Image (cartoon, rainbow, N blue to C red; front, side, top):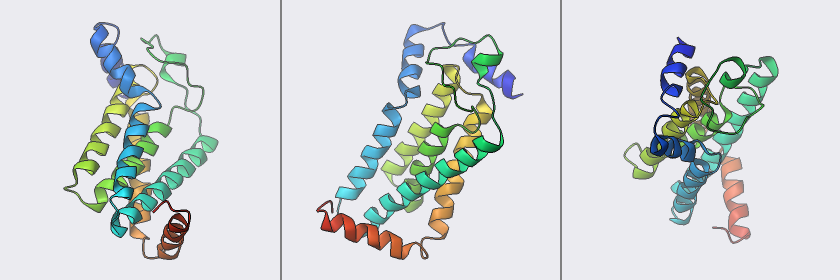
Length: 187
């Protein structure tokens, strides 16, 4: 089923130059991460203490998600679709494990942390949309199976939810980082 869905999505690649360039743009390792980090920076400089705590929690969620992905990769290595199948590859050849998608885990961790703060927040919704678009794009360009993206998204969601659930215990760390940022004139 995973390969069948991959084949249906990636099978569309290479047919329409405009679509290929659109998805290649969003599959990029810099575009969506930069946009989501920009959203966090906007939240930071809004000046509200609550918003700054969310930024710290998003960074902590990102760290937790990366740790989970790293541990997962040590236990199991999944080959990329282009190493096993004839695919339309519109991207460079990543050599790390395909599952779970590190990019999906990272983007979903930060986006979910933003969204958890205020489910009506336009920034949170936009971040979730960008994370989903990046995931779909990475299937389109041939570097991930759908399960890799779903697995990465789940890792990111779990990481952000975990950080949110233990936020009271993280209070000394959060306020310590906020104090440091203030001393460094970043807040």
